[in-house]
Length: 320
Image (cartoon, rainbow, N blue to C red):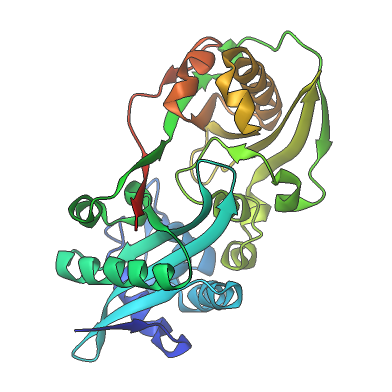
């Protein structure tokens, strides 16, 4: 087995690998409702994308891979007998603490080959160490690699929990607030910490808002109701990304909060931000609001009518 840096010529092999692990088990017009079973070749690029992202379509993956190359993000493949049997992509970025400057295994796919997975993650660790990073991160419920992360000694850095509420039953905010649209995109969020950190904050933002090339190409923005605003309530400043993706969950409005790290230590400020965030998300319709945040903020969410937050979704770090 040969583990090496990926090239554009590997695109077809990488897509074939990911298609073989299609989490929906077959191809559908609507994979989430398992409606409209059709041959793969009859699917549109968006319908393929719904089955697992850019890796499910060659034209989409080429755009995805090109963006990784432009940004200088490492991508590796494992090759065996002339066939791609594993792929690993590493996202590098910088965010407020506790993340700081980091490199994260964004995806490691091996079609259930732990030996290949181990080789890929170890190669990623070697690469980012040479790039000057002091650690390698992984979010195993989203990237894969849970078994290898345990073997290699990755430890917890962050935990994101999912909280849910009936939109009509969440109490309204008891303070006045002002909003403005984020005209500068992700740059308007600099200095704020994303409470939803199941994946890199910038990647989450660019996928949901369809600024990531493959999401833009398939028209995600056209099928997403979206509000991205900066909020000020007195001296409290934060940002809200609210999305209604009816093709994913018809009844839900998703809510992401971005806050000053210092404000997370104050339950009252978190509760105020959460309440205002729900008020903004309600504008998108939907019977439920689904919010993502660390368990340390659970009291604030539950105090305004949310439930859940019991299932860990860890972000792990291996320090060198």
